[in-house]
Image 1 (cartoon, helix red, strand yellow):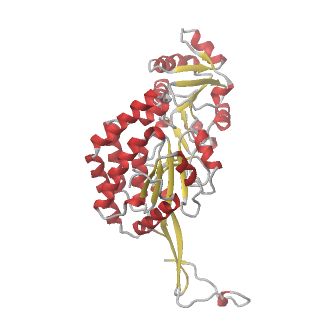
Image 2 (image 1 turned 90 degrees about the vertical axis):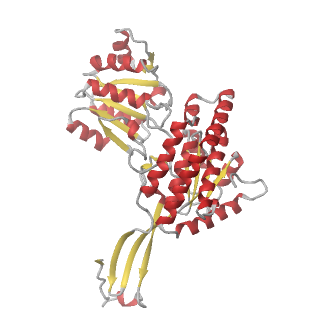
Image 3 (image 1 turned 180 degrees about the vertical axis):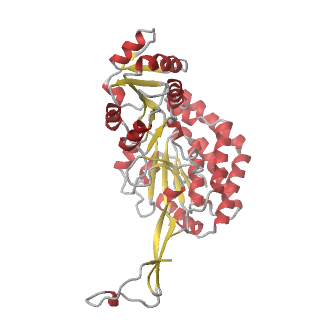
Amino acid sequence: MTATHATTDLATLAQQTREAARQLAVLPTEARNRAIAAMAQALEAATPEILAANAEDCRIALEEGLAKPLYGRLKLDEAKLQGAIAGVRDVERLDDPIGLVQIHRELDDGLVLKRISCPLGVLGVIFESRPDALVQIATLAIKSGNGVILKGGREAVRSCEALTRAIHQGLAQVGIDPAVVRLLTTREETVALLKLDGLVDLIIPRGSNSFVRFVQENTRIPVLGHADGICHLYVDAAADVAQAVAIAVDSKTQYPSACNAIETLLVHRAIAPEFLPQVAAALQGQSVELRGDTETQGILTAVGVAIHPATEADWETEYSDLILAIRVVDSLEMAIAHINTYGSRHTEAIATQDDQTASTFRHQVDAAGVFHNCSTRFADGFRYGFGAEVGISTQKMPPRGPVGLEGLVTYKYWVTGQGHVVAPYTGANAKPFTHKTL
């Protein structure tokens, strides 16, 4: 079954996914890895059908005037699909995150404590536009022994159905209940999913900030995710200009609709006259619209560069497009204050050759990722070696940043005794614990 049937209650389907997840969780590593390999093979075999489904989604999206950033995320060409399949195989090679002994401790003679990693249970993942996200999430769920209920955007429904059919075929080939990966297709099901506390253990939303906030405000299930991707690059007085230009261009243009693309460029006043004309020329060569504060406008208009005035709203906007706001700052402290005021705690970067300045930036900027002399586009689970990611979390409590396998497991405390009771360990003559690491 790819999508739910109107005649079947969503709670019943979620219960089936939960039961399938329990069976998956007790399978050995080798069995889950075989399932992932079968998924990759099935996706490769279904490539023509998947690409055709995505082409139809894209055709309809253009007709309906889908926003440019969403269209960029929706489009699934052969290269992007092959990259997603490569990510599946990368996850297969990763270490098994469940069944790990995190603590092994003797409490007393014959009384032993273990803390063991285990799956969360059932994940509810709601995402907009990006069908390749479905592949990443389903793979990470299988590897970590979790069930997953997926809800893609209406604009990607054909792509998601084709991908889920292939994944189900791969799972069935190795004897795993396909109900462990469930696809929902209607908005009504999204609302119903958010009410399944007790059956779903974690909700992961991926989409616009308004969409994520809607999810956060309409469920009692724990939510992991981020609402905004307002990322900055600060070019310090001690930056290497050529290097900083390359970092700025990549951070903005390599994939402008991604949540780890920069939206604001901060430039130290001391380097601005040299740096700004060079970076502006490079960015406009990539069709980037520039918006700047008064000082930025003065520097760039003097050398014939077209730039729009920036408003207060520009500092707090996630464009997800080829638009960049630029501000000249007096100091490192001013740059950090701007970032901590307007940033979304996602990813922030500094370009500087001064290690002490970089250290101050790293320690004082409040973000899940803080980068030095490299593009913010490296903030990605695949690029971190996680194989893939289910999303990026900007919350303070872990998991934080790109969330891979380690964010999809929790742990249990196992205590084994030989008839031990607490009474001897209490009172005036209480027996001491040994608390010895084993």
